Structure formats: C-alpha cells, structure tokens
Image (cartoon, rainbow, N blue to C red; front, side):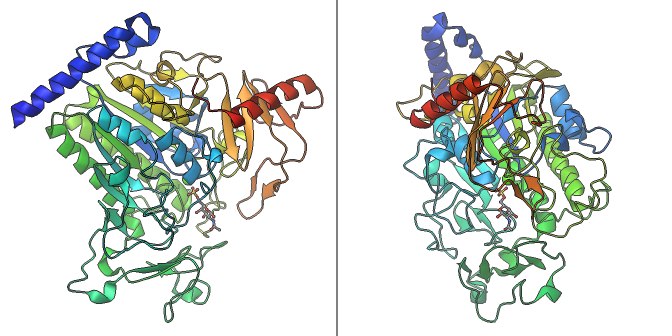
Length: 529
Ligand code: NG6
Ligand code: CA
C-alpha cells in the first residue's frame, strides 16, 4: 500500500514536470522546478486583523508579535496586499472561488444558519488542490454557510452538503463567527462533542428570527452577561456572552470562548502532523477566530498587551502562528511548506461589545497609516497584513510593494502546483505567482489594478484610486469608522496621499473617467486575463 502510494506520488511529480516542461518557453515555467516535491501550503487567515496590528508593519512600539515577525523575517512582507472586501464572507468567498463576491447576490455577512454560499456547484480552491494530489483541510472560522437551505440544517445529525462537498477532506469549523449562533464546532459535518444518546436534552435548535421560550436573552437578561454589548449581540446568551441569533441546547458541545484559539490551533496542528506522515502534500486553510469579537482570549494572555481583550487577542493570534511554525519545524517540513498569512478584512475597535478596546487603545493604530477600517471602502478596509514564507523558494526578509490581491491566490497556487484552470474556473483570479512568491516586489509590479468592495467599489491603478459614487452612509457611528461613501466621485493619489485626505476628482476629470470606465469593464467581464 505504502509503495503504491509512493509510486502514485512520484507519478504525480513526474506529471507536474511534464506539464512544466511543455510550458518551458513561457517565463512562468520557472515557478515549478523539478524534480522537487510539491510544497505543502498553509494559509493562516486572521479575522479583522489590521495592517497596523502586527509589529513588523511598523507597530513595534505598541504590540509584540514575535512569531508573525519571525515569519516576515524569513519571508516576504507585503505593503500593498488586499482582501477583496472589507468584511469576512465576501472576502473569504473570493479566496475560495477566485471570483469577486460582488458579482453574486447573497455574499454579504452571513448569519450562522445561512445555506452554503460557496456551493458544490462552484469550482473551489481546495478542489483544485485535490486535483493536484493534495490532502486538504479547513480549520477554524468558516462564515460561508452550510447545507442547501437557510435555517434548515440538522445540527443534531449531519450538516450536509458541507465542506467535504466543496473539496475539504477534513474540516473542523465554527459555522460563522464567534458572535453568531450556533456556538459549537462542526467536525466533518457533525457537531463535535454532542452526546445526544446520553443527553437528549442537548438537542440543538437555532433560529435567527424568534427567541426560544424560556431561554434568557442578552436583551432581557443583561445581568447574566459577563461582557455587555455596545450594539447588537443581545440575543442568545452562551458562556455569559450575548450573541447574534437564538439557540438552545448544545450542552458540553458548546464552545468556551476562552479556549477557541487553543482548540482550533490544536486541530490544525494535528492535521499537519497526520498529513506529514502521508506521501501526499497537504493544503491547510486555517482561519483563526482572533481578533474578531467577542474577544475573550485565554487567561494566559489576559492583561498581557495592556490594551485589553483586543490587544490580548492579537497576542493569542501570534501564539497560534507560533504553534503552526513550531509544528512545521519539529516535523522537519518547514523548508518545503509555503505559509501565507493574511487577514480577511481591516480592523475595527468597538465591534459591538464593551471590551474597553477603545479606551485602552493608546497609541496603537490597528489601521496603520491608512484611513477607514473594517466595513470601509477607504484603504484600511482591505489593505491587510500579508506575509509569505517558503524557505526553499521565497526570498527572506524582503518587503514587497507590488499590488497584490487575495483573489489571485487561486490561479497563482494552480500555477504553483501545475494545474490548468478550466474555462470559468476562478474567473477573476490571475496567475500572480511571481508576486506572491516575492520575486516581483516593486511598486508597479503585480496586478494592473486592484478592486476593493465595501458596498460600493473602488479601483486602483498605479497608485491612483477611484471610489465609485454611492448613496451609502459616510460613516458608521456604532463602530466609529468612516465608510468612505460619497455621492461624489472620489479620486486619491495613494502614492502621495496614502491616508486618502485629498479628493482630486475635480482636478483630474479625465483620470476619473478613465478609472470609472475600467471599473465598469471589470464589472461586466471576468477578470482572469
Ligand atoms: C456585524 C456585527 C459585528 C460583526 C460583523 C461581521 C452587529 C451589531 N455587528 O453585523 O459584530 O460580527 O457583522 O464581521 O451585529 S465579519 O468580520 O465576520 O465580517
Ligand atoms: Ca472579518
């Protein structure tokens, strides 16, 4: 059996060489040298981690992130990398499908009982990796819906279709976010740790419309809360924290917020350990809950940052990164593992719980030098931390100023592992492997344009950013973030004005027209080439 598998792996490697050989005339062929084994690929995706939330992006004086910094020192750190949207569901949709979420209705922030948004009909990133011979896993925050009907999932049986049907061999996930019910982990389609045989009373019910009679809610029973909400988050109470949505049951399967990082990091580590014993390479999509609300880090991080739970959650995130890196080191596979670290969207300080994040922020600037934050079309909405390390192939200790977008991970990884993309697969994703492996690092390299999405759209070309007019609110006062909407067109010269202070639209009407036309073209056609 072992030999059969090994032979199969050899055959795949040879096939990869053959594919690369055919393409030898094209410059991208150098990206897949032979006869090297395909690298393992680990994506570590933080939640709401801002550009300025990691020390190596210039915040050394306010936060310590030694593990993230080590990754950067051993790899390439990006100064101009973007998620495709300023909130989680659409940003993650783009990573897994290689398509801009704004092309599809129903890709906004999903409730915990949403039907699958990345569906079995999609051609997904993990499926492409499976085709290339990879063993795949998703661990941590999901937030892309489950099952085929909203509100109809069987939380007490198998939640299906699920991640298996879209290319993940193994999954251990939180359905949505920590502030949304159901507050349980789902392992390969089943709620982990649910023991209905001995505890039928733990049967789980979930509703996003009606409270369950007799169950306390944050709205009616604030005295039961250990963390008060600042806005929203006043429905079910689980572990003393008010959530979005109602649920009952769960028993011992309910998560303990303080242990989420430990639990999911441990599952990610175990997957790596198991996969490393096999001959096939592995692909891990590890999505942390940190630093999303409710921020309830483990007690060993409490008080350590001096910034309250938000800062402590950053330290906890950094710890998770350290555990993954240590695991790769101890298994001797770090050299041939491509690690990509990033965040789904920009930062927010008060996102609905009174956790003193605003009061204790001090000089720390989660958004770095950029304007706006999570939810915003200004830069801080999608200009996210991004670091890539692969000791064998990525230069160490470099900074890339190339324009880069997470939507390109799909086609770039396909090029890396030698997979052709079918017609219609990953329609907006481009092969930007030379950028993502840190070979092309200069400004002006990389994508010819970056499209951002936060309700309205923006497009940036050569440092000029155009924001399409929109009737949306100019700011969200609950979270104290400028959303960047304006009925007027906006044009910023990011090269000179990265803080987007001077709207130059009136001065450069031709440039506005040009960028608006380009955005219109992208709206109408796929973005692949
Ligand atoms: C908002 C939530 C916020 C967060 C966000 C999604 C309220 C008042 N606010 O609606 O707390 O959950 O959705 O964040 O409910 S994301 O990072 O998953 O997109
Ligand atoms: Ca997020």
